[in-house]
Image (cartoon, rainbow, N blue to C red; front, side, top):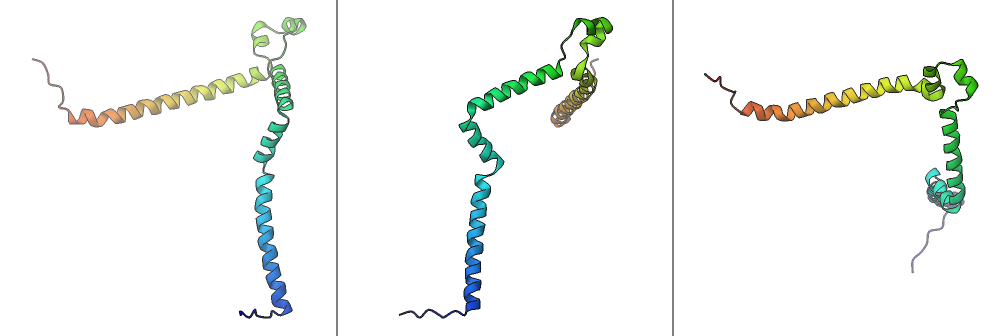
Length: 134
């Protein structure tokens, strides 16, 4: 027979506290997994798929209406043809986006050319230099 040690009330309280802490940690992990934004949104998408599609369609239409303003007659009469084409948020964002896009394309092109040249440089160093034709 095994003899179980008799715990003092303080030792019993400490043991119960350790057990409660372990249970709390386990429950917290399960709770964070269950209520993480990814899990909540995926459950919502499964349950309310039609509402999500409808909301996305409405948001897309609203974004298009906001980004591309409607050209009315009084707007076109007040503005020149160049201003009416570049009006709205698209017109405001066009120049900076073109500038940064051009800069990004140039950086990418330069990096690409540099990497190609670095790959071919060791190959050409092993070859003999071209001789002059007499």
